[in-house]
Amino acid sequence: MPDPPPEEPRTIVARATGSAGNALRSLLEIAINGSGVLPGAKSAAAKHLVKAGSAEDALESLVVSHAGLAVAQGFVTNIGGIATIAVGLPVNIAGLAVIQTRLVASIAHLRGYDVDSRRVRTALILTLLGADGVNRLMRLGTLPTTPLAIATAPVFDPSLDRLVSEKVFAALAGRIGGRNAAVLFARRIPLLGGGVSGAMDGVSTIEIGAYAREQFVRRRLSEDGPGAS
View (cartoon, rainbow, N blue to C red):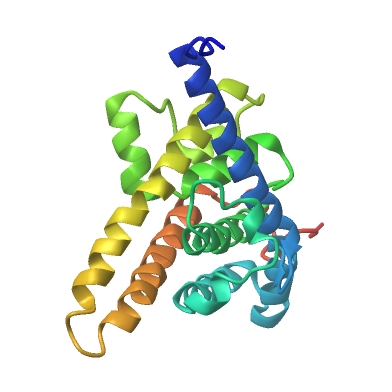
């Protein structure tokens, strides 16, 4: 029986991009709507808003709590439903991405953005690259604009959404090598190996939270957060 004809490069790229998009859409669903032991972004935002008393104070609390979740490796790798997004990504990387996306979505929600909007969801995913990642792609001309501009654009751009999915998925996958190298080195030093991965995750989560607060500027005048009149 003759071998099937080789796939066209464009077909291979389209399939890879589609897988990235599907994985990140599943990630968003878990982060925004919750799954297993992890409540969704809106619930988290409401809880912190009630506790803190104002939206801006709630943002500080959200960043601190999500940094703590990121450090707790055993927690983030056991979020219910995480297997649905671990396509080409280790579960711990996917779990961290859920935590960080949940933080970004909570910040956006408290700042007055509709996290169910496709434009905002594209922006949420892009924010995971952080300031350095987004600025680098913009300098290269790969990315046309910032998460804020995407979230507030007049229409949803499917081609931009696919581009963002591809770049963010590649960045998440690329973290594997750096993480493994750091952990392997740290294991040579007593007491350090067990904590280095969690520390890296905590720091990166704080940085992502800061970038999200910079990008998702307030869209409501009231300090009472979502739902305020």
